[in-house]
Each structure stands twice: as C-alpha cells, then as structure tokens.
Image (tube, rainbow, N blue to C red; front, side, top):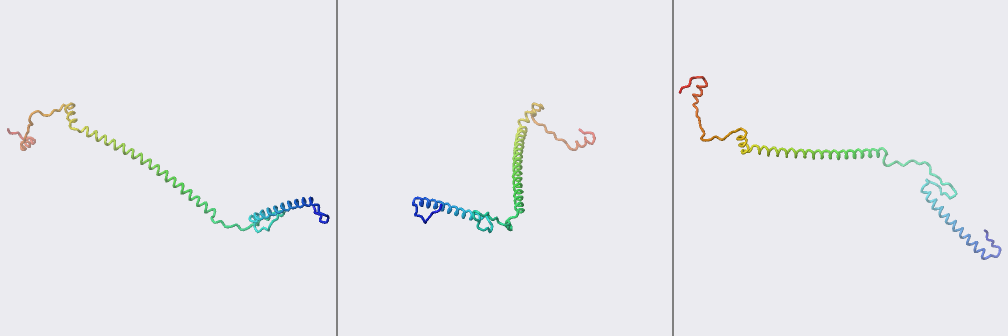
Amino acid sequence: MKIDRTSPPDLPAWVEQTKATQGVDEILKRAREDDERESHRESHRLFHARKASSLDAPVLRTNKKAARRRYSTFGIMIVIFSVGIGVVLYISNIITVNHLAAEIGRLEDRYDEIRDAEERLRAEVNKKSALDRIESLATERLSLRFPQGQRLSITLDEELVEAVVEGEPSQP
C-alpha cells in the first residue's frame, strides 16, 4: 500500500497504514538480526568465508593442511597394549599368589595333622612303656615271677674255666 501525500490525509486509513508498515518494519528488523546471528555462527564454521546473506549459499572452506596430531596413533596403540600387558601380568600375579596361599593353608593343615598323630603316638609309647604295664604283661602272658628268697652268687675261678674249655681234666 502506498500512501498518497498529495491528497488530504484520510486519518483513520493513514493510521492503519502506518501501523501496518511499523509491523512490517519490525519483522524486517528481526529478520536482519536473525541473519546477522546466523552469519556470525556460520563464520565460525567457515574458513575465510565472505559474509553470506540469507540469499547466498554458504561458502565452504577449502582444503587446508591438517594439523599435526600431538600423539601418534601408533604411540597410543603401544601405550594401550603395554597397559593391557601390565593388567594381565598383575591379574596373573594375584591368581598365583592366591593359589600359593591356598597351598600353604593345605600344607599347614597337613602339618597339624602329622603333629597331632606324632603326639598320639608318643602318648601311646609312654603308656605302653610304663613299668606297671610291663610287669603285668610279664606275669600274665609269660608267667614270669619275682624270685623268692635270697639271691645266690657264684664266683668262678678263671683258671678252672680255662682248663675246662681247653679239655684238661678237672681236679677236685
């Protein structure tokens, strides 16, 4: 709508027209602000791009020499492999220590059993070597008795013993 300034203004129509143009101006202003924000965002994504309007297509960046990586892929793989080997060795060590601890426990139990058996055998030997038991076995099973009366003592003349052994006749 065009405002005709030559004719006397029709006040209500002019007010309507002015309100409509203010609304359009405000919409255009917002659109320009949005375009500026969008072009600012795109300028961060684009490499040496010229400012693009909403009608122009965005200019993509050209190929650029790749930035050198700080750490090489091979180096990272070596580190990961080394850490993996370390973890495997650590876990293997823990498993071995646990097996050895279990074996020590079994051997200690076996030692305790053998020591207890030795103590039982010593007690049995002490019980069987008691003098009262030996005396009762000798009298009951072997029919041995203590001697009654005095003991006899015999003394031998060594010369006579030698003569008997050599076959010489004995002299009374």
